[in-house]
Image (cartoon, rainbow, N blue to C red; front, side, top):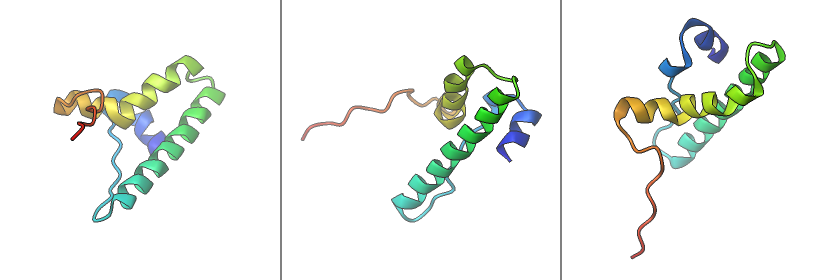
Length: 84
């Protein structure tokens, strides 16, 4: 599905989502699957000479977090924990 989405629209329009609910582990597992699937798709794109290695990290970062941060006006970096 990720390969199809990348073929149909620009990467700046894709957002990764965990579909997790109820338990934190569900979010973790959902995003873990997303990262693994995206890595496999992007590796295939490099093998097919449709992407360069230098494009992988920025593209993945955009899909996994950057696009959502841009669209929703979120900070790009995680806030630092406060000491209590």
